[in-house]
Length: 98
Image (cartoon, rainbow, N blue to C red; front, side, top):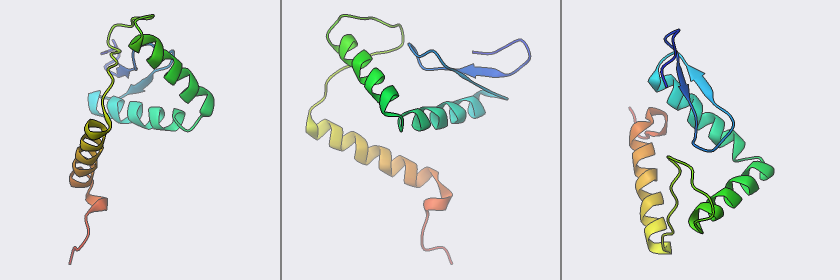
């Protein structure tokens, strides 16, 4: 969300926190970093899981927050694909440079 001062506010639907970056790219980077940090907090993980279950069961609706169940094979495919994307996109992960 662009702000009057030129900064960009980013948030996850349904959460009560946000980050502000100097531009869209920085805001998304900060959003991912903050989400990763929060996912190390057991209370946040429990709250996030409860919200996910309520959405899955049709008990709660938050615009922009969608939930669907996938089987183990689909989960494996997605995590492998994500790993490939991350390793290609991160020059620090590249090995074998001479």
